[in-house]
Image (cartoon, rainbow, N blue to C red; front, side, top):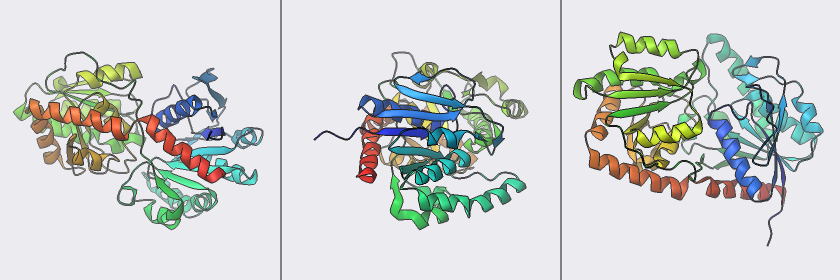
Length: 380
């Protein structure tokens, strides 16, 4: 029996070539949906500025935005763009309130089915943002959750990890499905290049919105590791306003010669870096939604060290693909890094286990089918 071909709209705040977990989720999922015959349109802010209107069959409509609020582009023409579009399902994404809430509301007005993927908890940094976020969560966010047809959460441990929104989400448990993030393992795979000894890789945007990735803790852990492994090398991929802040931390810790800031890198460069690194570390300290970069590195047969709030931490531990540590625990983080770097056989075994785990559970082909099934159930 042939599956129904659907017209799907995605509304992330931003979209390719901007990097980031939500962007990659929308790109990879949309590519798989197009391959199976569905029509996909992405409506997003024009950031970074681009004239690109089509990627592998994905139609893109880029809108001007006025400013940002909590890392969300405010695109006033978004509701009008949705209203004049033909679609069966609108699939939106959090934590970007404007685009998500407007998409769900307009979808409801048009009597169309709506899906929201919640990639992360809502961040509350400054005193003012805490007040604004609390008001939003108990008003507009609640309304959106009551209106949306299906809620997808990428972190199986969301009830523990999402400290700011878990109690609210629990009210709508009947709508929630856990579907993890995925990896294009036809692209992310080990390259035939030599691994560099005692090299640790970290990948993230280096701005205030991604400070929860825990790079400052990793730098402090590297200071401890250096006592046992003097030639330890930490490779940092990413750009942002906090780059100088992290450079100064490395100088203060007297590890600047052990740390290299590579800046932002394209996906093809990331595959090379994953493949030649000895270890990948994601030391997130709070509100980690999933941690896709850890899965990408595993697809390249690189062992990982992650904190227990990372979305795939449970699978990583059960499949012996890396080591799991508590957030903000410098000693445990340092000891785990040392253990893997000093045990080549363990490192190789963990790398192999990780690649097999990604193939079995985190392949986008498999995950896209689950999302497709979700669409079909709510459009019957």
